Image (tube, rainbow, N blue to C red):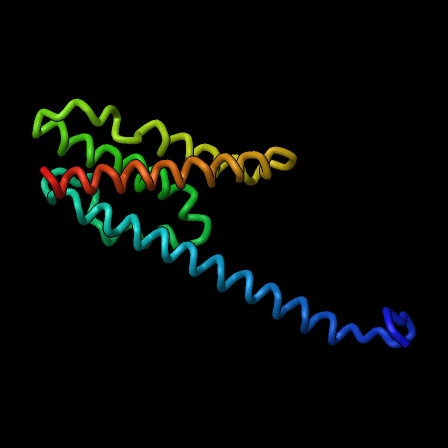
Length: 147
C-alpha cells in the first residue's frame, strides 16, 4: 500500500527525521554566521589599526546567542565608523557615511525579527540591508587597498 497509513505511524521515526532536519538547519545557519563573521573580521583588518573602532577579533562575539542582538550595534556601525575615520584622515569625501545608516537599519531590522507578524518582513529587510552593507564595506576595503 502506498501513502500514509495512520495505523502504522511510528512516532520515533518522525522524531528522528524531525531532529535530523533541525540539526542540518542549525549546522547550515552556524556555517553562514561563521562566514559572515569571517567577512567582518577581514573588513576590520583592512582598516589601519589607528582608525578601527574595535579589534577585528571581537566580531566573533556575534556567534554568542542573545548577546549578538546587542553586540551587532557595535560591530556593524563600528565598521562604518572605522572606514569613515580612515577616509576622513586622507581627506576623501566621496565615500559618504561609509554605510553607517545601512548598518544601523540592518541592526534595527534584525531586532524587529522577534516581533510577531512583523518578523518575516523585517527578516527580509535585514537580509537585504546586510548584503548591501557588506557590498559597500567590500568596496571601501578595495578603495583602501588602492589608496
